[in-house]
Length: 141
Image 1 (cartoon, rainbow, N blue to C red):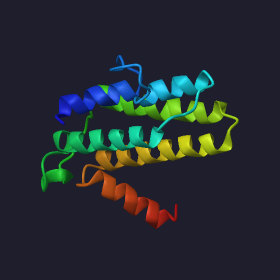
Image 2 (image 1 turned 120 degrees about the vertical axis):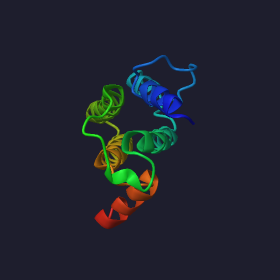
Image 3 (image 1 turned 180 degrees about the horizontal axis):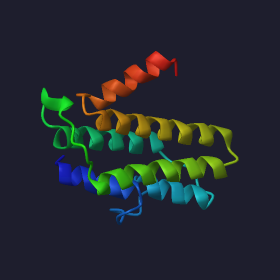
Image 4 (image 1 turned 45 degrees about the vertical axis):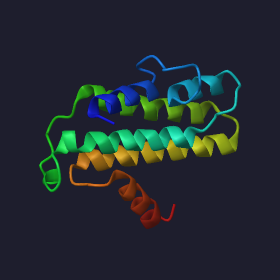
């Protein structure tokens, strides 16, 4: 996946671009379906794809290894907005849901996406997915 494709996918998951199909594989479409009373769907796969997108964007934002510590002071607004929108939409869906298992899944999605974004924004994380796993273990989650 190229950085351009990764940004396009992030924007789709955030509901800021047209979905590829009506199959609810995009997080924004899944959340919309949930608000219509449908099942949440495979949100975890969507979150995994978001993490993959951030992993692809990481070197273009922070430089190739081993220069990750040379993070830019400004991050592209389209990426920042997409991540923010994903977290806001998942948080809102969790607040609106009366189904406790769905609320927990949504909050996990927010925590995972936000932690992945924090890793990219820090500028010194090489493997975003491994960092998330380590954070979960360190926090006992």
